[in-house]
Picture 1 (cartoon, one colour):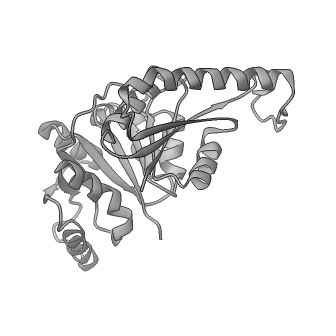
Picture 2 (cartoon, rainbow, N blue to C red):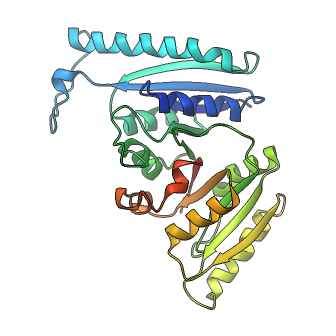
Length: 283
């Protein structure tokens, strides 16, 4: 069955790099790639404005045509980097917010994963993750989101770090994508726990047992750090090992807003180097 991949783009270098990463990640897989660009009409892009221009209006049609033309050119430019026999390209342009547009496409096209860059043309240069990236990582609950740093280059992922506090029971379906990536590339999953107490509580012990069972078909190991903050611990672990990817389960609303806030940018240097896979906790 085809893999259906959503590729949001603002035509920035960062967005293009994320698309190149996705094409390489699925180089030998039959995939349909859906390129998405959202646009706004400058004269109506007013904070708090509820007016929505309609098709047929001159300003609307100008921006729509500009978006369509740039998407066509982008797909033409990237076609040489794709697997002609297995990859199909599709363009989607819409007047909308990125989150709303992404959710609509995910539902309509039954998207399997969203792959996006972590900085764009309008992104703050002082923040590792821009507003759009965090918004999708937080609020897209239908499928995983893979965030690609602007300077990341593709290489077969051989080690994926999976930080957890073991507080929430794991489900096979939410870890399916992580396990599939590990199987495809022969990657080891390094489960990382930053200890907050000397002895784990019974639910944490049970959840660790669940994880051992869920990862039984892939290489994995369990690691613990203590006396260090979660952010610093994850950063140090990834940096010291040269890990290729980090995977989180988005356990609650605000999770990424908290750990990827601007004030933590210096602490989270590792996230500017390795892709971040966001898995969904569907209760």
